[in-house]
Length: 203
Image (cartoon, rainbow, N blue to C red):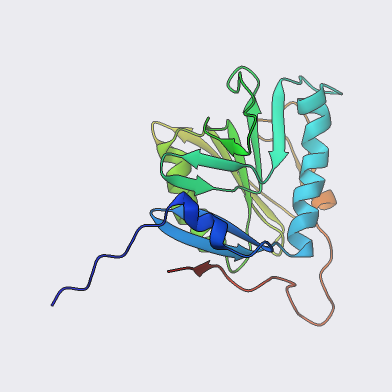
């Protein structure tokens, strides 16, 4: 006897998750993830601090971007909340009044943890490519690495691999130099990673 088909998640399912969790819908599955750990938050905040002044405000850079933390982006039926995303102003001509974005960004950044890396690297990157996001960054705060990808002919091409204390001028923000050492925060001394428990799929 065949197993019953699994019910696909809908946007209404996102309202059922606890307030201290982040919900996403990827390939019809509701993925629920704990709020990020302090190491993760530090990387996201530090990177935003590097990018927003030159690219959001035009201070020491070209300006012309909207860059924000954890936007809820609707890629068709997929609902994804990247750690950071950026739109060129000509691409996001109308700012939504609500929290949902329906225009694909020019750049996304996912900060990896052991519990989320598989979804970030596989499922999300596939969705980003299908919806023609030109650039994606993957940052591992434990390994202290940055991977830069560019979408070319529908496939991701590696544009740069960086680590530790390298100084990076990476697409699409090559006009500035980012000192990666400023993104890392030393972890706890007991060997713990400080990461929360892994993502859950709700029925």
